Amino acid sequence: MRYFINLSLLCRNRNFYLLYIGQFISFFGTMITSVALPYQIYHETHSTLWIGLLSLCELLPLLITALLGGALADRHHRQCLLFIAEILLVMGCILLAYNAGLATPHIWLIFVAGTLMSAIDGLHRPSRDSLIQQMVAKEDFSTVGALSTFMYSVGMIAGPAIAGLIITHFGLVTTFTVDITTYLISLITLIMMKDIPKPKIMQNLSTLASLKQGLQYALSKQELLGTYVVDFAAMVFGMPMALFPAMAESFGGVKTLGLLYAAPAIGALIISFCSGWTERVKRQGVAIAIAALFWGLAIVFFGLSKNLWLALFFLAIAGAFDAVSGIFRQTMWNTVIPNHYRGRLAGIEMIGYLSGPKLGDTEAGLIATAFSVTTSVVSGGLFCIIGVAICCYYLPLFWKYKVDNSIL
Image (cartoon, helix red, strand yellow):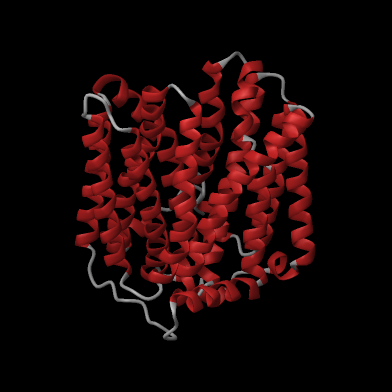
């Protein structure tokens, strides 16, 4: 009986191993740059407003390119699309490194490079997700979910820490050069992948008609719709990260802020490392719903906590349950969605997890302003629980979903 993360897929599937290693390394670079960009903006302008504007400029084009990237991924060679996207990302990093090396870096150039790289990421992610489904057997989908959660957790914890060290000791030019190097490694792994066919095009449709078809498919499947609704409710109501700076003040000041941000990722890392049990779960809709309910409950207790370590404990618990939900969501997406729809629905999924946290920040900020920070956090956790319960009631096929034993 396996209790820890299953690494056997990396030994059995050469193409997946190459893709996973390349994406793991490049994700470190992505996290490093995600810290370096706002740092550079603030260093040059001493304005948090400019940081917020950069975030907005990065989000808006991504909402469009994620859908376009999904349509392209279902019509063209996904390995080639990934290669082209990463070449363009390398060029963006080179531009950032060049700008950082100037005596007076151009703010407008940071915005241009950051916006373009974010837009390119919308073309990158759907191709990668659909390519993984294409190259991995159905019985390994739960393993893929656990490995992906492990990759993101490690990157989100170690990436910012490494970024801080590189920026402090070597400067921004070296920081962006590190990101360039990680992408070059990823490009090499993409070149080494063999025998990846072009996806089969079921119908010759326009891009707009193709996107409409993908959306109709998602809405027609209660199983899929349930995963989207539950995740969206958890992100909008139960993700109070925008309030962490205010909460840090009551826990000892800014020195505790990093701990608050890191705690959910640490919980996710622990659960992904001990994820062997997830391969034996058949009622995956139930697993997603219960994990989201406990996420909301943990957020409630986090909001009520007056002690820093107790607050960090409940944040880590919340992160762990979010990871459980994520593992099963990804497993269900890969199992339920046919490969010729996978790119388009990956684009729709991307829109959800990009817009959800932004709306959650707004919701948390408004309630905190009208009432209090504690009220905002606690009510958000309760709304998450209520939202999940409503979803399970009105989408019974999501709650009843069970993996077909014939594919396992």
